[in-house]
Length: 138
Image 1 (tube, rainbow, N blue to C red):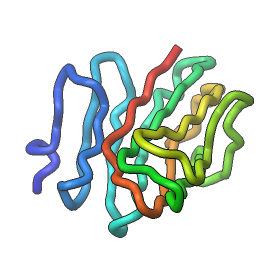
Image 2 (tube, helix red, strand yellow):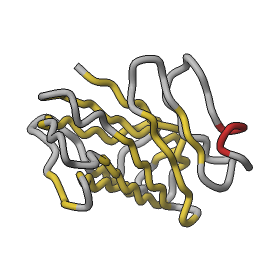
Image 3 (cartoon, rainbow, N blue to C red):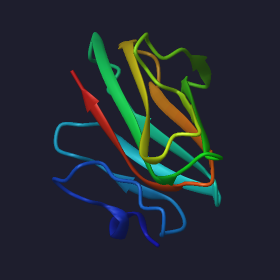
């Protein structure tokens, strides 16, 4: 699949679980994100941020369906290859919840003119179906 075929213009950022490979998506006014499916129960989402902006707040949300008593899901965030902690109020793991569930990471990023500013989120889950993600900035 070519990068241009995977481009989605003017819509909400979505990862599609049924499609294999790298996909670039961008919602209007939001960072460009690429998703990769390294395995059936993992996903890596990489978003290139604009380092020229002084300070930004982001809210990342990964969605899952079909969760039940033995479902688990975890999320890790990294900025330029360095682990970052999600802010208070974030939900980076779930276990044993029923129905549609989501993981959330809220974080603030200070712009650095000489940095690449790549936000990478790693998702891993068991006994659920990944249905997509949203990335909003304040």
